Image (cartoon, helix red, strand yellow):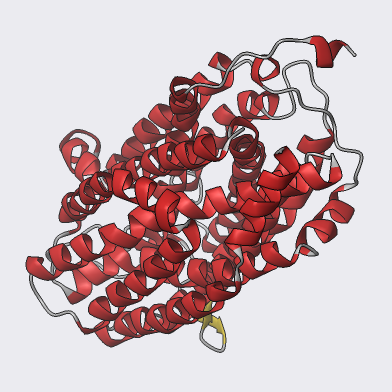
Length: 455
């Protein structure tokens, strides 16, 4: 009765921007690990890029099963563990009834451990024993993904809860997409920052100090919305009564959600292949120094951000589904260009400019689609399981990411230019398939159902 009588504060775009800072923080940490761990722990140095494989000597590099490398299996195991914990954390968050809300308390507790674990990944597994290093790397990756899940799953649930209207859902998806790509882009500055520090602290320590600086910035960005936003002031949330895996099963029983997830898994498989290989494509195929990675990424980000207003407007005019399909096909073109690229910085700019279009589209709209499905389910059932919908999505696409990491490290075990091109071809084919599958998603039916229930 008390919660019904309480006057909630209006959700504003300013509040949504504050919320989006958290996305910047965790995307920066995620970017440091996803974009640079494979680069520094595998590969081989050359005259132009002496830091490639800087920490490779400390861990097992040879294939241990067919062409599967230990490092690839460890990365894949981390993503699978991450995927499995998603519904558990989502269920915990959905069913919680803390004084500070269902989501914010998790964010407050996990920001600092999440950042510290990121630093440890580039610092701890470098003892004199390769076996010990392999073990430490495995443990730290499991902990890293656990902490990331415990921050991100409750955070993502707030996308649907703060997106109380269709306009707010598109807006918050736009804002967090912007802060996400800014975080990812800044993570590509790691070699530049390390280069500035190298003269004073040495080659290996320069990487560690650079990671520590970025992790500190990311931690502050995650803590600010966690302490600024008073969840109970804006959201009248009630604990879910459904147990985690029952909730997960119910979530996947939603036909439209399944259609969305099928294509999403394939898309993230392709995107992970591309992102993991990006530094290698630029250094090994295009002959570009790794310090140019940030310049190219910044170019891609700047163009993508300029396209955000266009995506926002077109999403309301022609619908999210049509734009997402265009984004899938556009990314296929990007992967195709990468597969045939030659030497020269101009190839890097061609890929950067072309990728800006699908980056703008697919950075914004998929989250809004999940929020739509979660909102319709809440209206139909009277139970808010937003956390589980976003967790179910991440559960599925992280399986795709895990497979992509195994495929990438297995295909590139020879470290030849042809092996890196092969990964781009795989990404091209799978992304095209994802586009075709997404035609089965019925956006009009979902939006019509939301409107009917609200009316």
